[in-house]
Image (cartoon, rainbow, N blue to C red; front, top):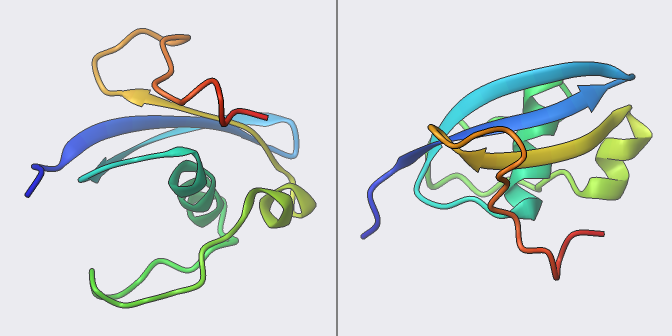
Length: 89
């Protein structure tokens, strides 16, 4: 079982830059878009870790003004994103 790590997620909400830190076992682009939407007040944060909720997708988040979502491991420099370049679009 992987141990949780701290990740920094940067995004823009209606053009204004936002940043927050989250502790998760793993993070990928889809999860980053969902959690950025939650931070923006769009997505639903599950009450229990095992509760299944519908994730906010990138197109849905963009409809509500969330853009430019990037993420990195805490302690890394801005611009050193861990996102997979093959899935970034």
